[in-house]
Image 1 (cartoon, rainbow, N blue to C red):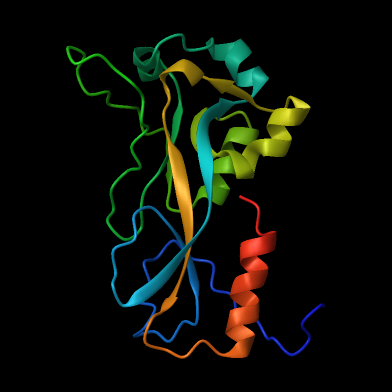
Image 2: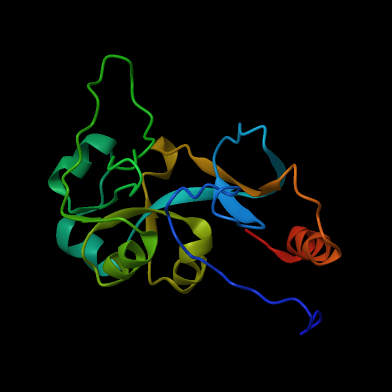
Length: 181
């Protein structure tokens, strides 16, 4: 509304797009950014949490240690670009074996993961921005907080070689100031 001359064409995808080859003006990505062809501006960081409904935890018990997850329904995210499961970054002792989680439900985007956990289907690893309201209202509870360490950094990226038009510059500045992750 503030900028009526700016048109948006939004492509919501977990696919790793080639910003330059596919003609994107700007993308938002997570993780480390090493492409020298792109300008990167940090937007913010978002912690992730393991969550379940109180009903699920009443029926199945609350895990006290990461090894307890082997007896739970684990709702997992598979990266579409690589086919690999997203690793749940649970702290463990060097002597403990790598944890293999059950794949009760596996999806390639996080929205159905959030829906499944809200339906009481199991435990999921999700960004706090997606579950903040459900946590504050008690619809979801976090588990294994003392064992979890993961914060994801979000970046805006745009081609370094392309002239940043006034519209693009205004959009970048607007996102930088108003997007809260």
